[in-house]
Length: 274
Ligand code: 2YC
Image 1 (spheres, helix red, strand yellow):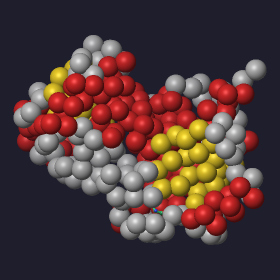
Image 2 (cartoon, protein in one colour; image 1 turned 120 degrees about the vertical axis):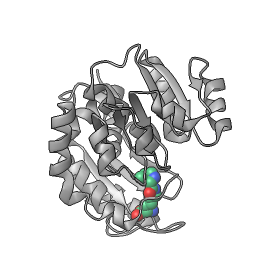
Image 3 (cartoon, helix red, strand yellow; image 1 turned 135 degrees about the horizontal axis):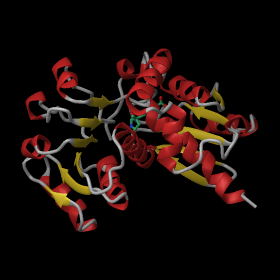
């Protein structure tokens, strides 16, 4: 899993308005609406104000990323949740979250990033929520993806989930990765997915691209008018790439976290709906 840097995170809270303006312009959706579409729920099915989110800093492995927890808190507040960062980290922070009556607890170490719904006893995880959210963003930037040729770049945890989800949406899905064996494994798991070995050729031949890789995409390979939905970090598209593509959708954390929060809240709505 690619680890965010302090630099990736430092401006997230201050840039939420700007990201929302960009998404409204390019997809017609707010951050919250996109998150709801990602998880397949009607935006007003739940009153998010009724849910309290706790974010617990985790010091294991490479440790805390400055402003990571505060950014997750601010993203949840932006879409309407009550949210706070625990004063303590790790297990003490978890205990604090339960004592402060959190309904959903966000925690991330270097391998997993989850949003645990205590009532539903279920976790939303960042890989699946990010996959769903960026597919929703791509779909919203055009019309439906049904029968469209869509390329997934990166056959890791997010890309492999994207490929499976896109098949269910009726798209013609190809996947490519610098490690072709990883693409072949996704193809073995999802026979309708086509594994393409030549990454450059794959990108040159697709208008609709989901980039779930940390690798650089050369601007010369981007198709004129391409729609690129790109959760991948580091984000290395240059100004010329933004010129050439119809739209490039990216943020380092926001859309994925918003989808995690909505997905986690939705678990208890689904669980307790009479
Ligand atoms: O500040 C903290 O609590 C740290 N333990 C957070 C570590 C997050 C590591 N994961 C990542 O940087 C990326 C995120 C974009 C989500 C998935 N991996």
